[in-house]
Length: 197
Image (cartoon, rainbow, N blue to C red; front, side, top):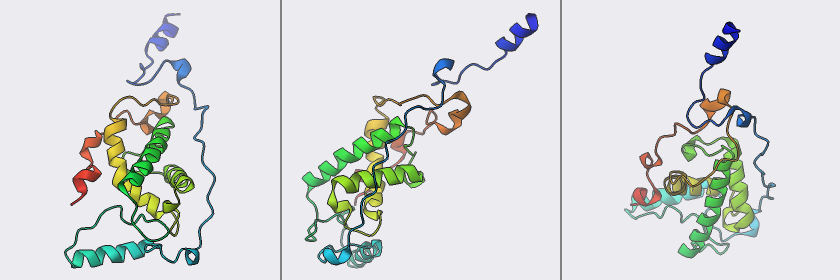
């Protein structure tokens, strides 16, 4: 009996952030991945100026050579080629926040967007392309990716650090090394307002 008691008492206590053992189960809730959207044909949208990422890169290089300022999100245009309005960008951001909140809920939110896994990348791109055609006027998902690179630090600072978001489940103790309990503060990463010149 004493040996059994000793073995029980020698078990390590849960790490901070872990719930009681009955809750330390593999997740029963999974991320609801949106269906893939059909790629648009560039020939049907001749006025969209930046269909390929290389088109945008060349434009940025030309602007820099002329000493002109580049708006980080001006690759997003309507089908007529006009840059989207600030109010439209706010609509984009509202949906993006919902998507990132959902990724957080299911433990798929990366420390920085450059360190994302394919699940996060695919989920976000599909959400944005389903709701906003501006993200579909391109080859692949590069417009959704660039938008996330610019705006994800803002969500990280304003929402994830706020402490109001809730995980759908607690990762089992044996998998704690994959959680975000030890995330660095997001203020370590520049926000879009800090990076714009």
